[in-house]
Length: 208
Image (cartoon, rainbow, N blue to C red; front, top):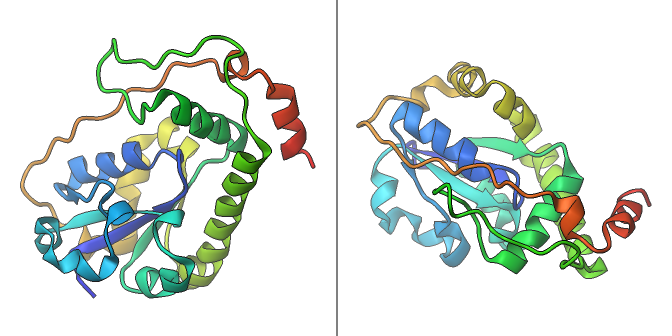
């Protein structure tokens, strides 16, 4: 176990980048970005960031289920979820259309025509499967270790308090490193209800 590492476990469009970078900026930690998406965890000690305090982004689908236990047991973790699962799903599907993951400039907002997006049932089923896998993993690898479970909406309401409270959980990991100021993404300004042609159908899926 690398004592420089804290994992952040979440599902796609849970606010992981915003929350993770807030922690990195406050505590001077390195950000792994999406390294785990394209690389096998067994090679992580070869990375430059592994030699300094860092946050490892772990979207639940980044790791094959057969290896999930090994990875999640190898570090302390913060678990992040988004309470508004409907908006999370709409954001996920919209991103697939716009190819815009995050916005860092005021003129970089993604553009979609009204009623131009149709979510598919297959997209919904995959989204819900990953949400269920997240909660299953939390019960097995997070809850029993008393690891912090953070609701993204709570962070948005009071970001400083939520981040600083993590010190009480695992203080030795949050030692201040060299000053780091990662750029913070802007909120994506999009009325998803207007963009999705089958919005009412999507609500029915969630109510099944």
